Length: 278
Image (tube, rainbow, N blue to C red; front, side, top):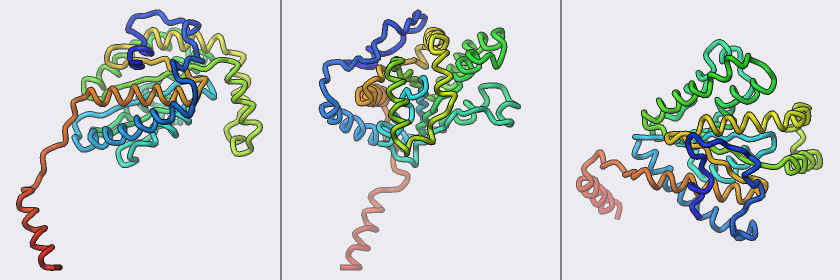
């Protein structure tokens, strides 16, 4: 299955999340079966990321958005940890600091955008400014409704500067979210993740659904596509995302740069040194 085409949100399409099954897992029957594919994808991702870093001409920005417990941290841990930390980093979009509030809403996104050769993952992203601010009336509608076009313009600018953008919406059901909340309650090592806001935000489930649908409909473009990833099964989420990222990087036609030294001369020095120590 070509998951890139299967889960991409086509530009100008009108999204209704009820049309996407969060339980979807293709023909795969078990986590054990999927892990073999994920492992293969991750090994390939490590090779491709090294090539991206070495070439030093383009970069990759990955945005992760989801409702609470949707699996953003899990995606980073199980898929993107395959990459070398030297050329990969995570930027978390939490409540804006006073410094960030003193700038336009896209400032921190541009600040954390990847440099040449780098992969950057946004754990949440600049899209919080058309999600949380909308649901909780933090800014007037007249302001947040203009932000879709501003986001598209910013992402187009980044893409024109060879920053490739892949955006993943991790789609889980309301029942699955409640199940994951219970798992956190039962696991003391997860208690630090629990907040009252997690539960109070469930009251806004339908409002978040509408906000996510608008985000996906208005901001999936040819240069910065959104993908709706079925995420009730964590292992399928990991499989689909690793496959999409792998396929995208393989399509960049990256090449290792030429050596900066005379390799023949280096060989001569090597054999000379080897002879000396023999």
